Image (cartoon, rainbow, N blue to C red; front, side):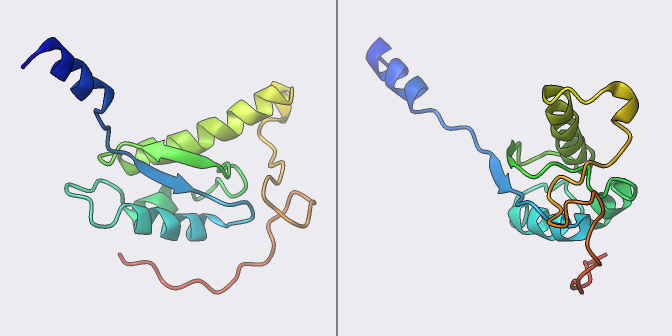
Length: 127
C-alpha cells in the first residue's frame, strides 16, 4: 500500500455511531422507546429499556433533550450518564448555583412550571 492510499483510507475512515435525537417534552419512558429503536439490530447490544427506566426513576426532567452520538456498544449506564451530564452542563452554562441544581428546571416541559404533564398512555416496554 502506498502512502497516498494510506492517506486516502485514513481520511475516509468511518466510525460507527448510533445517533439519537431526543426531542423536548418527552418523559423518560418515551426516551426509552426512542433509544430502544436506535439500538435495535446492533450486534452485542448492551442497552436495555428496562434498565433505562430503572436507572432514571428519579430523573424525570433531568435528562436533557439533544442529539447524541453513542458508541454502538454503549451500556445503559453510559447512556444515562451522558443525558444527565448534558443536563448539568447546561445548568452550569446558565449559571445555576450548585444548591439549586437538585431542582428540576423543567427543560422540555411545555407547561413551563417545572412539572411534567400528566403521563400519556405509553406502550408497555419489553422486559
